Image (tube, rainbow, N blue to C red; front, side, top):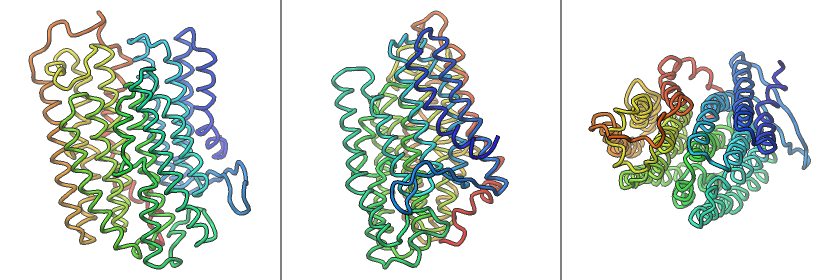
Length: 488
């Protein structure tokens, strides 16, 4: 299979899957096979592309040329290949889990959620493989449009209001901040292609660099930085299956990948010119990480707690990019990996608990680990990774982040990152401990068969995925080295 064909499959398989699921919603078995099959095809193609990138090869597919010198194009580079392979692999687990939740809850509109999740996955692949800022902007908006209907899936007024807030926040930031940044970049550099070393390197003065950095950081609202973070609260009202897609597999990762691409391929060494703005933004990011973790601590609804916890993890990605250092970029890439694995496990575990027991509150999970041991074992692993406990993925990401902050002299950033980790332990540690050590509730299940294998297996496998950085951290650093070659 050629790299070009793999790229088209990775982008197109979930779109075809979404169409088929909507056209053939019954019988449920066929619907589920189509949904899982599309995710599997995408994952196989993304894995092949990752192997192509690891061999040092690349490819480029141009779909359109709307403006002279500006293509709607997708290409292969290490960061995009890594993120696409990771998220597509987790996407297979999510597809299985999605089918399990639909069966357990007897959701009459499950095909819509499956279709939206597939479209979101396609858009996320577009973000990962985007060849330039124009393509990135188009698929970034497509991701917003694919995900907001999931929030209103229940049809109630609260869900519809939350969906409107979500859409307004993300589109407002993109049109009002990100789009002007793209136009300004084109005016300065005369191009929009991502370039190793930085498109703006040597072309901007400190004032221009600082202004552009502020526009990009706030324009990429999917990363969750206040004050453009209102969509996080809105998305926490979404169904459990939708939250897996939004917080683990598409929206938050898209914000993180976008921040890394902008830092490495748009700014590069020009980030040093924006040092003053970066310092102020670093302080805001660090404080926001701690506040998000504190808000998570105050939430009893598992969806809300995990949403703000994931937001805090996403902000760590932003922090790494603002350090303008190769170690910081590496830490950010590792943090996206840790976020995806950890948040997917937590949100799928919450969905499994809801589907099997109907419980949604943290206080009501005490002792559930006694009757759902595999689900809560996966949840405990994810909690340990999010906190930053070795040997899980989150530990390596936070270690490199703190090291990068110390290397660049931003001791306050390192302190705030450490404080956020402590606060993360405060809202996740007792949750896992109480679930595993508390007295088992009597007759907790809504259904006689409890949680099916389709609900449990994805949680265990995604939790186990938090261990893989232990084995490949050094090779991964070499694989990602083009991020900073010739740049910062």
